[in-house]
Image 1: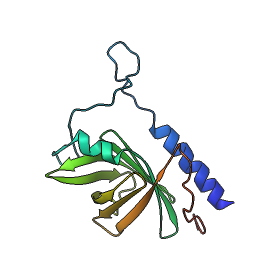
Image 2: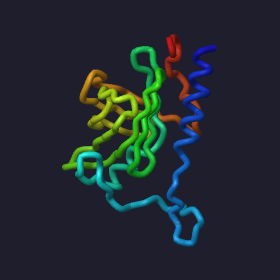
Image 3: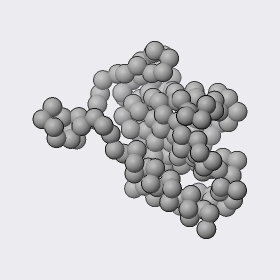
Length: 156
């Protein structure tokens, strides 16, 4: 029952993060073309749009019995974890490395700076500075939990 509630909450979070305040079009209509300009990250550096596209999508993991959802849209990144962790920031290339930089509303520093070790169509591996260390995510297709993702004990 708890796993179903967590899955529903994360699916809702995934749907909400797909919305953006920027309509993308100058005529007031949404643009189907993703942004390709670089933007500043939380440390004042710039991130590459090309690297952001490699990371784009909804990524799910289970770490220490908690569900973790990492969503990358363009150069924007958001992370949600059971227990109330909500973070936002940037994702992209910095000095030849793919990086994720987040600031969490709860003040936690477990996942503020992450270096992408590998990414492909199905998985993403990030090494976070802080207490989490290495974390492996599975790509979520269509906002659904990927098959084989461990859910036992979520939220306990």
